[in-house]
Image (cartoon, rainbow, N blue to C red; front, side, top):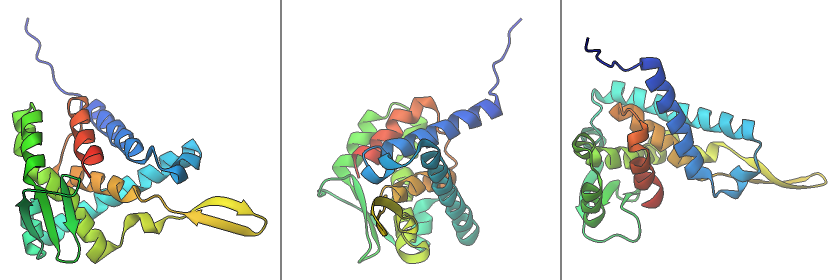
Length: 200
């Protein structure tokens, strides 16, 4: 008798959540302020920031009536275009002119690297969504990392505080996943890591 394998929704959700947290740890791994936090505090912080990204995705979809990041960008007056050369990364948000720039060499390289046709179709949307979140930070919600301060050192009554800049990328990661309804599975883990954490 043939048995058809069905996906366990709870297991799929659990894998997705673990991978979201793992990607956040990768983003923050080299941050000295983050490294000084206790493990429980690290996890709680990541969970809170991921939730921020989810919530922003929810209200922007409700407000704009679509989850297509290019259409949302257009409706918000943000220009999305390609350029041949970039400074370093593969994409960027230019707040001065409200522009999302995707460097063509980067996009073409990713198209060659991605082995999943389904994933390739969403590639441009993925990159635009990530930068769209940074636009929303600058113009609507404030930069996420600036919401949090952490003690770096103490000397008597004096406390020096620091911030974890990568928290904005963690929120952007969650925003992108929620906006595009991405199922982050082990098969795309390396791809997501490559996109977000070696090209920006």
